[in-house]
Image 1: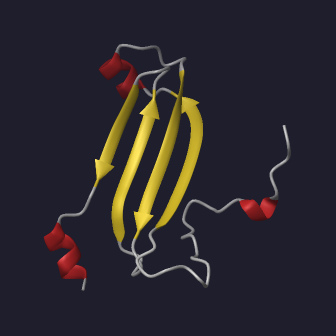
Image 2: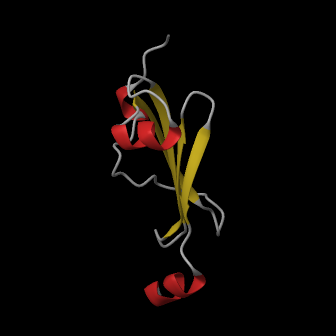
Length: 97
């Protein structure tokens, strides 16, 4: 497997920067993933062992003003994905302006 360049990785709290020639209305997306063991609550909820691994994929969509348009976390328990999605209501976005 090829080694990842240290400059290709963004820390979890970093906001991606748009290229200078990005068209108006461009949405930025920060995506990250990791593998971890299933925790006790998940094991109980899904009837699986805490010795199993799961894949966590997180995506955050930002508008031009750095407001979060949508935040999605998908946890895949060996082929059984479970998605948690947060999308602000229009009145929440209006209050930010």
